[in-house]
Image (cartoon, rainbow over all chains, first blue to last red; front, side):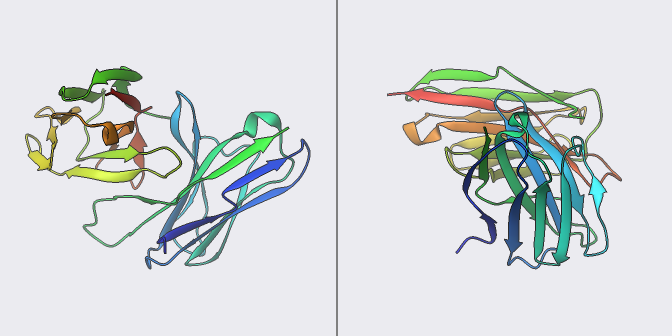
Length: 115
Length: 111
């Protein structure tokens, strides 16, 4: 089983609908991230959380919200989806232990299409 | 925003050839990472570099941490079809908890 699991893997929705992407991890990491990938733009950080009580905006947080329900769970919501939010979304985790180098572990991605 | 420059965006190489790619920045980084993303998958770490000048290999892959701390290089020797994918560089600056990513380099291997 994957250490970082994303659901759903694929979703097609309509403009204006609310969408939630979920992420769970079994690595025991305290830090979790949501990235968006678009062709030619690489990976852009949406939100990140360093522990259950910590939520931080990334580069492109507008139109998104997150919830850190537990150490192992971090969900991304689109309150009212729009077509330019069509993208591949990745959840990632890493450890915040002192001296840790920051290597990220990624889920398999959630492909979202907004019509 | 992103601080790392990767070029070219895509590369078409003949099977068996070597391929090199680099990643540059105007800022100093204390860690460089190279990831590979295969179709339908998330990025997976290939090589991590922690010291300026460090040269590290992983099978046919070799990466170097530039001595200026502002760049890194990845080489793939004797390419094979399964090398196809997007290669991302990532860097971490001292005191910054987040990774900066390059835009990726799409590699296509022609049999």
